[in-house]
Image (cartoon, rainbow, N blue to C red; front, top):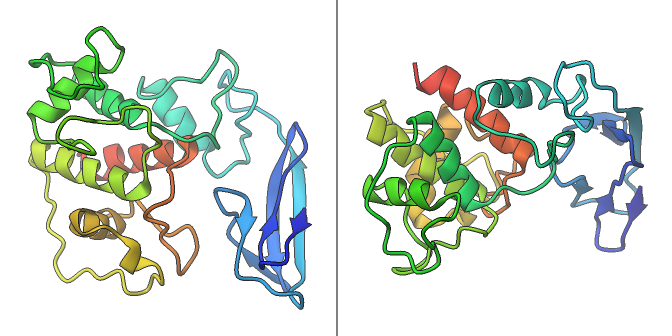
Length: 241
């Protein structure tokens, strides 16, 4: 656990361990996805407990403890063929998820229908995600980062995840009404891009994408594989009924 002069505390568990709990001035706080606390000062007392990772989930992944907050979600997406490991024994819950991976997962949910090739110049035919991108683009589920680029290998942001799921829900005919939903309780709500505002309101109202803390939504932050697994499980169980 290391503190810096800019008010951040970085927590790095040893191999085989994970963060068990964090308290600030005696009050337990949520474990941040990136293991970094911010907004602290020299008077704050931070206490971190660590726990050994044990795997009794029945999964083949040694880096998914049954005590981790994402264990159920990882088991769900793995058993339902939505996400695989990054190797035979690793799920890499803290790794980022690319835009191509998200589209591929949704394509699998639709039993991999075919579509004419997309016009994105950075999506070559024959790549594992080419058919998925073609299908998603043809059905208005995705947009490119420009008229000609999809940026398949870029880490997907939380607001991009919300937008893609929102459009996919509309494609499926699910109810995506937002009503008077507001994100004013989040101090960083102004950081949400205009194109993703309605989608983020919907995703938050449906409990798909919640705050990384009580007051921050981190719309521009990347979505980790653990977060994506959790979001997908919530989507299938709560939206795709």
